[in-house]
Length: 320
Image 1 (cartoon, rainbow, N blue to C red):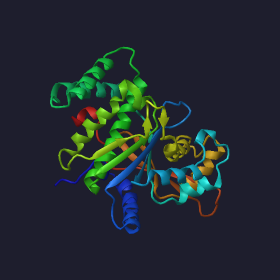
Image 2: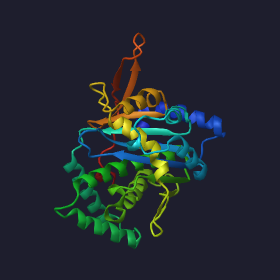
Image 3: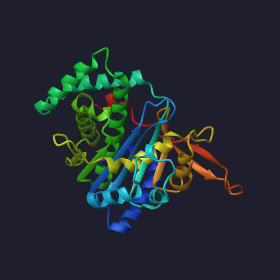
Image 4: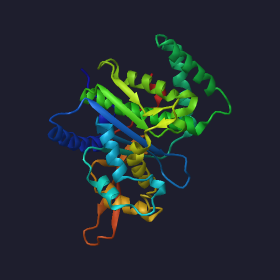
C-alpha cells in the first residue's frame, strides 16, 4: 500500500512528529487509533499574521481534559492581561498535545476562491454517487459561489482550513491507522457558512486524499447541542487560541511582538515546547520558524526561518 501523505513530505514537520510519536508509544504502550484535533484561527486582522492552529492529541476522556484546561487556561487569550504561571507551565510542559500553527503569507484570495468554484463544479459534474442530501448541499453551494456578493474572505478561509485539516486526517489515517477522529473547532463563519458546507468539502477532499487506502474513519465534529443552545467547545479551543494569539502577533522579520503577554508566552512556553511548531506558508512552501537564543546575551535572540524544499499540495480544485 502507498503510505505517502501530503504532510509526510515535509521533513521539518516529520522530524518533530517522530519524536512526539516515540514519546506517545512509550507513555501509552503504542500509537492510539483515536485522535482529538482542536483548532482556532486568527484571520483577516490587518494588524496580525493570518494563521491557522491545529492541536493534535490522542483521544482522551473529555471531562478530565476539560477540567485540566479550565484550571490551566482559565480565560480566553483576549481576556488575559498578564499570563498566569499555570498557563505558561501547561503550555510548556504538557506532553500529549502536538500543535501546528501555520502563518499564511502571499495568499491570493481571488485565486483561492476561483479554485474553490472550479472544485465545486467538478464535484457536481463527476461525483454522482454521493448521498442525495450531500448532492443537494453541494449544488446549493455552487449557486452561492456564483453570486456577486459572496463573502470572499470567508470562502478563502474555508478553503485553507478544509485543505489543511484534510491533510491532517489523511496523515493520521494512513500513517497511524486512525479509526476515530474528533474535531473541536472555533465555531466561526468558516464553519457556519452555507449551513456548514465545509464538512462536505472536507469529506470529499479526505476521501480523495486517502483514495481507498484505508477503510472509512469515524469523524466527529464539535461538542454542542444547537437546539438546547449548549456549546461545550469553548474550553477545548483555549489551547490553540492562546498559541494562535501569540503566533499571530509575531513579527519574525523585525523580531518583535505587539504586546508583552505575547512575548511572555513565546519566550517562556511556545519556543521551549518542541511539540509546538510555527510554520510559514510562503510561495507554496512550508518553512519552519525557529527561535535561536543568543548564548552570550540571554535577553537577545534571533528568529530563523528554515526553508522547506518540498512544495505544499496544490489548491483544492486539483485534488478532484
